[in-house]
Length: 155
Ligand code: RP5
Image 1 (cartoon, protein in one colour):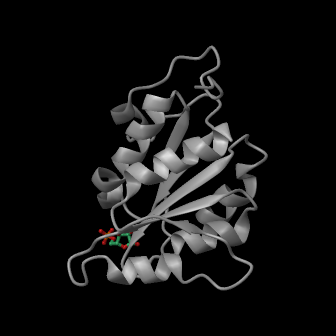
Image 2 (image 1 turned 90 degrees about the vertical axis):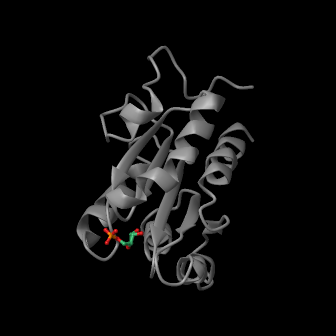
C-alpha cells in the first residue's frame, strides 16, 4: 500500500479529526451538511485512517452555508486535497455543489433521514446533470466512500 498522505506528520485519531481539528497536509476533505451527520460519516475517516491517508473533516451545508462551501471547494485543489467526500441528508445538494465548485473527484454519501429513509438524499446525490460528476455510494455508505477515495489516490 502506498504511504502517500502519511508523510512524516502524525496521523490524528479519527475522533479528533471529526472534532474538526486542523490536520497537516490532508489529501481528503470529508465535508457534511450537519454536525448530526458525523456518526454516519465517521466510517469514511476510519477507512482512510486504515489506509494511512490523511484527511480533514468540516461541517458545511450547501443550503445553510453556501459561501463557505463555495470557498472550501474552490480552494481545495490549491490546498493539496485530492478527493472530496461530501455527505448530506434530505435534499442533499452538498455533493453536487462541491463538484460544481471544484474539479477534484467528489464522492457523495447520501445520509438516511427521519422521513424517507435516505431515498431523498440518494436521488439528490446520484441524479446529477451532465457536466457535474459525482460518484455516489450507497445510503449511509461512508465506508465505501473512504475506500473509494483511497483507490483514487492510490490509482
Ligand atoms: C442536511 O440536512 C444535512 O446533511 C442533514 O443530514 C439534514 C438535516 O440537518 P440537521 O437539521 O440535522 O442539521 O443538510
